[in-house]
Length: 232
Length: 99
Image (cartoon, rainbow over all chains, first blue to last red; front, side):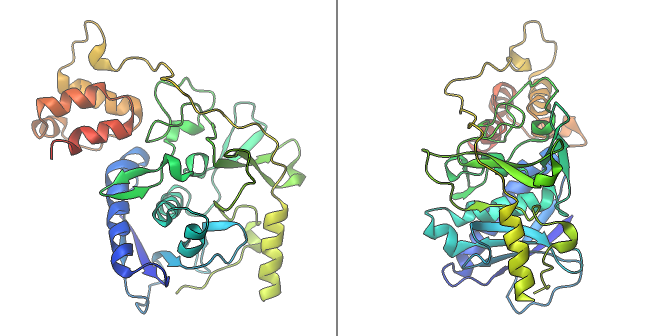
């Protein structure tokens, strides 16, 4: 069982609100996400002063993004433990639901804790980042768990681009084809024919508006150059 | 230190390529998934076995070690609903609605 310690450092979200979202996300992981991915995990909201061991996973709710264009992201600490951030105030400023950002970052931490997993497309020429919420990350695709909106997520066969599809490929059923990107979502990829371009994105924008913030991973930064967050 | 962080973020941002791929359209109608097992003509499976089979077919994951014990905790209405659900979310609602 993976244990994720949650701390609320936000000034716009109260501890009871965070506790309600934590409970909903625990239910989402136990009932929806965990069985599909074979992962068991539980979040626990703790006071911000609580010391963490070197092995605790963390998900921190804070106000503002420290990276341009991010509603949340996940990375690893200097100890190598996964660490996610949910930017609650920034998410609200973009008209988004911070609970969806929280759920998104939690599920993606569980899917790919080291941010180093990838899937090849059918042609074998593109390597897709194994981020299980990005393709369906828009709030309009979220679903209700006990009165809290949580992120839709793709199911494991989503990455099997050459395998016949027998059923929808995300939990809500919104995604219907391998590597499909729904409006408001994106997928990061590395073009193996031109790897020098680094990680790029396929997007599906909403209403032709400029792409706003996303809940993105830190994959664009080479592992050796990634910022190493301190354990808090 | 801070400069290094900013530089890393800048690199991260700059490595994002052009956004010129067309969006994948959202299906406006049922894409025509095959009928779940309970609807298969002549299927020998019991209702509960069909519900479990449909759970696996949808990719929702089935974790119970003892399927018999699992079936014993489900009502016939839940089982029927789970066997005919077309998404994992719809299937989950089968058990929520009765509680």
